[in-house]
Length: 244
Image 1 (cartoon, helix red, strand yellow):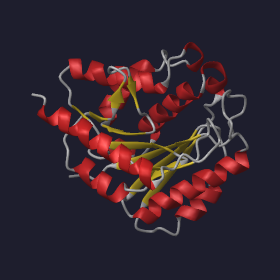
Image 2 (cartoon, helix red, strand yellow):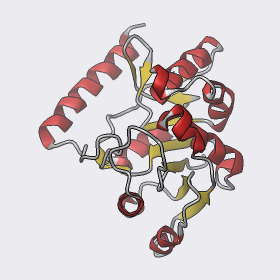
Image 3 (tube, helix red, strand yellow):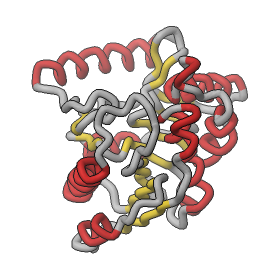
């Protein structure tokens, strides 16, 4: 089976995008570099696409990634962040995802895309990605709030799902109207289910590490919080697998 491709989304220069506490480009660039290096050192993935939407120079990141010869890393940078000021960062991130699927060489040959917000990494990536590879699905994400809200920081999907279902939500995502990327991912997932596509919950709880750009603080879970999330995730998957 072809290995999945990790898609890291990024905005280094946020410009006039509102509701971004961590906005200094130099600080954000360092955040992205640290997260990228954590992914590459984890040896959990051998194909990575880093897609950035403010047209920023990515040579620093390219130099950092060059030392990992066992992993293919493709860098994409385009000027597409104007939508962030008009509709918020959720709309801007969706545009990054769609641009990457349309323009990436690695994603053009991928059967599965694992998307992660670019400043974040996952502590348990090796075991989690191995479990994702063992599943068959069109979209894999954690959904809550009566199927209205899906965690968009980390999810997996086929390129067809992203283009044909998530892409249809491009014009609906608007942070100022209270419609976030998380709502769009949940809506796209339920629509795909109605068309008899396959949804799966994440096979394990991703142990997120990194800095939130929205609140500007560390969101890495401590051991107690990780254990609570692990138990909750196990219960949710158990109910899903045994309710029918």
